[in-house]
Length: 244
Image (cartoon, rainbow, N blue to C red; front, side, top):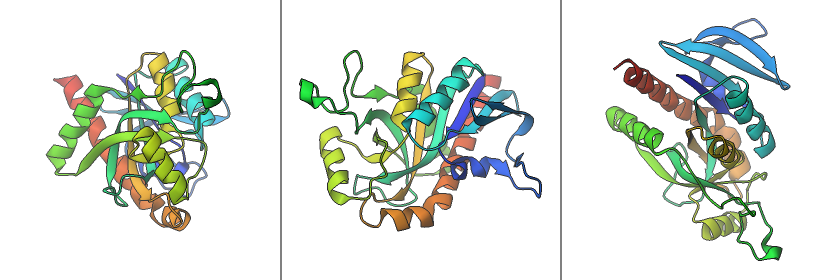
């Protein structure tokens, strides 16, 4: 099994990387096999027990995330994609540090309503893309084993850092979204089109309101660590299932 693990920012995959005095980081959680430069990005090819891992951060936004997900699948042959990172909360029951897994994802900034279509829709597309149910169930099993609270819901994606209560409320009301970020739905579209199972996990870093910028800066690393540690537990569970 070959699994692609990606985040948007280096901080979101940093917990997977060790630190050294050298210019290049050393993979801490995995056995590094090779570092490959491709498509103006770096990909770390690694091993975790019997699993092959491809690890990368895409850079922020839907275009870069689509490029990285496509590269992981088409160039490196990944059979599953796991996205780890942070998000802003829409649902008032989500607090900073909480983990949420996407049941489905949408693009809140996609707008051709002038032609009579709903927000988030283009012809031959769909408003929501559903994440892989088996990976969601596996995540819930990990959460139960580790006594970790794991919430699920709709995650909305757009090429905007939302720091406005009005905008946040509109996204929540329009899409029924629980959290928002800048990459997940684009990864979902790629994986759905190529029939590759995918999973999006986010740790809440801010409340997408007027305090979002300061909260994001303060809690980014800690929230990223929570998300990535959970993904590592998922990888361990996948490895166990592959062995059994």
